[in-house]
Image (tube, rainbow, N blue to C red):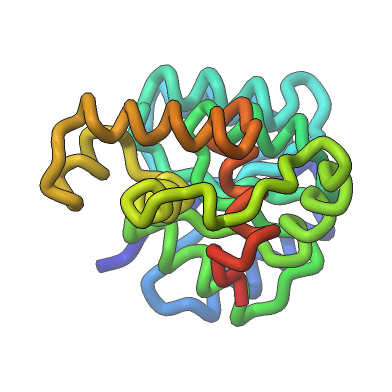
Length: 213
């Protein structure tokens, strides 16, 4: 299967180079290139891609606002965010919206392939360098509780949250009720002092639960 891919970035030189890289991947075809979030959202009203690479910093409409509008149109739209830097606020907002892929623009070919495979498989991909930057930013704010405070089931739920699964998807996978999953999620946030799923990902990375290699 060939996946129709859109590339949304305001830098022509980057788009040209990234398109060349993507064209080396047999099941990816770059169908549209757009230079800002507004044009991307407008085109979405008429067409739907299989995969979107979306820059964070753009004129007219930035990637964060564009992702919010795009996912309101197509909640299952597969988006990989592109960034030149690590910023927790952007990461947290994108994670809350449902974006599952995060890449730095310095990523190599192998990492881009890994991100594509994960997101197309409905899993999350977090660029290791990006996450380490964010973990460092958040280090003083994060809980220093040990993993021994979490039950085996809570750790299982935490890992599935990191994979981007919804409460219902986690319930189906672990053969428990959605209500039980949501109780575990609440306990996780209480025990780790995390406010959202993005913070839980940071916690998992910091404590060696999430292998980003």
